[in-house]
Amino acid sequence: MTTLQVSDLTVRHHGPRGPVIAVDGVSLQIPSGTTLGLVGESGSGKSSLARAIVGLDPVHGGKVLLDGRELRVRTVRDRRRLGRLVQVVLQDPDTALDPRMTVRQTLVEAATAFHRLDRRVRPERVAALLELVGLDPRLADRLPRQLSGGQRQRVAVARALAVEPGLLIADEITSALDVSVQASVLNTIRELQRRLGLSMLFIGHNLPAVCYVSDTVAVMRQGRIVETAATGALLRTPQHPYTRTLLASVPSLRTPPTEEEPS
Ligand SMILES: Nc1ncnc2c1ncn2[C@@H]1O[C@H](COP(=O)(O)OP(=O)(O)OP(=O)(O)O)[C@@H](O)[C@H]1O
Ligand SMILES: [Mg+2]
Image (cartoon, rainbow, N blue to C red; front, side, top):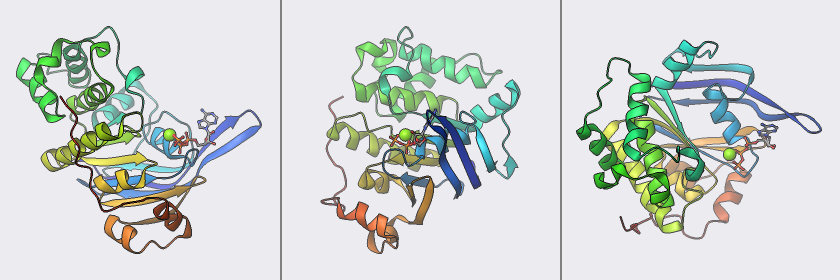
């Protein structure tokens, strides 16, 4: 379990017409074992923020603290330490996995990459990881192309969990999936929170989906966080006009996703 603190973080990109400030002085906190949802329209800077946290996008200013220690990604050792603590799952289940590796190889590689001493990953471990993300362990010897999009996304989550990170960053992991499959993956995320006590940054542009899995929700717009509140409070008494606009565009917020994906 890991505590994340981000203070006054700024991320700048080089766009075709000069610098783009993607993240503009953002501060947030994820106490150990809780989930922060980050919601905002396309281009608001969500992925830039996530990528900067793990050193994939350049940090122009501000600080990232993991368990109180400032995060620096300068050396291979830094990257290993970071990878052990924080794992990221991205949107696209099609490019996330190596097409030539079976599910088992993918999970074993992830588990051994960060835990040198634990070279032998037993079959039970692979089965347990697959069960954790709601997959039949018999899928272990399949290749990504022999799986559905939802199954591939679950494998990507299992791979991240194989590393036993303290913090999981999920960036739009359900956006590319059918609505019913989305609901099922969201339920899996909730189950993982309950069983593993993970800290999580859950990013999406679908407010109900983000609220469904988050303790606290931060609303991002044009590189800034305009409102942060406990999920219930955000739904009941949104403070910022932009949050109200987001809420107004959602038909039925209180219906939790229930449909199940055939496995
Ligand atoms: N590598 C890059 N080079 C230049 N500009 C970038 C780069 N990555 C992102 N941007 C710009 O930074 C801004 C924020 O992009 P970002 O991808 O962080 O948004 P987002 O909230 O994740 O959007 P989405 O919901 O579409 O994923 C946008 O204006 C985008 O065009
Ligand atoms: Mg994004």
